[in-house]
Structure formats: structure tokens, C-alpha cells
Image 1: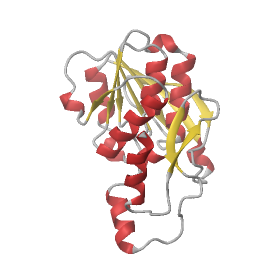
Image 2 (image 1 turned 90 degrees about the vertical axis):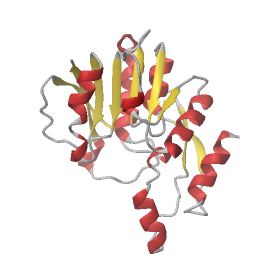
Image 3 (image 1 turned 30 degrees about the horizontal axis):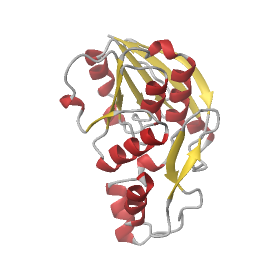
Length: 216
């Protein structure tokens, strides 16, 4: 089963953890995510360091991803018939939403091989097809739409906003981290309250997700 490979990944560091198929609330998508009662106590230093080096981002459906996925499903004309690139795909939730909304091709891009494994498994779970890529710069040909959710947690990633505009005519960004989002060519579409799954009990400020649109 596709989840077996994902279980091996999480259990290599957290032996009592596992992945389970979750039906997302308010979004008609299922994802393999880490179990809600995964170990949250103090970890051995070696394990903690390895998790910091290669976090299991793909094992959670981050609030921004869920909100952006819902927005795309509610507004399929944004991606229908188009070539879409999902930057930092993680679990693949936004890529899957684009595929379900009728995109001609969806490229799920992530430098983490485990994330690409998860995105492929989750695509199979939802009966859609994704093209996997490990490098934004290796994606050849025209891209109509770039989608990116929860990639601005590190301010070093902000220059990507300009790069997205150079690559595609339309950019959709879901974010809950940048409080004064003011970048040329981007404007706010909406703000939605949401939480990460499994729930990480994040502070209220990180439960307010904004969707921004950018253009070339």
C-alpha cells in the first residue's frame, strides 16, 4: 500500500508514529497524515536534530494549504485547462485540488524526496495524476499558474514571490505568517480561519490564512 513507504519514513525517527488516511474537513480531499496522537514529548537529541534537518512537513495538512485548496476548488476557472506548478507541495493537497479542478497538468515540486513520495501517494488516494519535480528550475516549458502554500515561514523565501511572477502569469499564495504582506503585483483575495491537521495547537495569529493573487 502507498502508506507503507510513508510509515517507514516516519517510523525511522518516531517508531510509534504512523500515517493514516484523513478526510479533510471542508475540503473533499483525503490525505495520508501523521496520526493525531503522534509522540510530542521530549525527543532524544539525535532524533530532534534529524527532525530539524529534515522535518516531516508533508505529514501535516497545514492551514494555508487547506485554505488554498478549498479556494481553488471553489474557483476552478483559475486553473481549469491550465498548466499548474505547486511550489513546495508537501502533502500535495493544493496540487490535488488543482487537478480535481480540471488543470491540464499539475507539477508537484518539492526538494524533499519524502514529500514527493507523499504527494504521489495522496494523488493515488484521490484518483488524480501529478507530475513530480525536485527542482523549480528544472521545470521546462510554459507554466500558466503557480500555487504556493505556507512557504513564507522563512523570510529568506520572500524573493521567490518575484521569481513566481517571472515564471507564470498568475500566482496564488496561501500564507498565515507574513502580517504585513505588501509586495509589488500581489493583492489580497480573502482571509479565512483554519488550523493545521493534525492540530498543532498553533497560536491564534497563525490560524488566520490569507490568499493572495499575483500577476506578471
